[in-house]
Length: 74
Image (cartoon, rainbow, N blue to C red; front, side, top):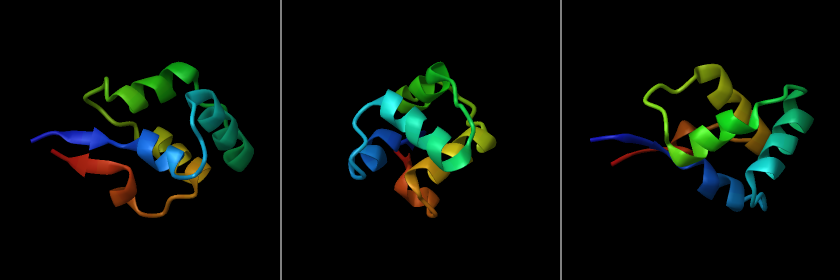
């Protein structure tokens, strides 16, 4: 089994279609600039470790309160 992030689906359901748009929304909602490379890694599931602070920023940017919306187990 593997944990996968589904940030792209959650973003698209909110009208956010690019990683740049997501970065802008995160900055708007939180005041924090999240690096484009960090967002890209999260979109592509390139890392084995999930940074909780970065995940929280993404959730705040997308106004998500339920982890199940962006994390799946396959």
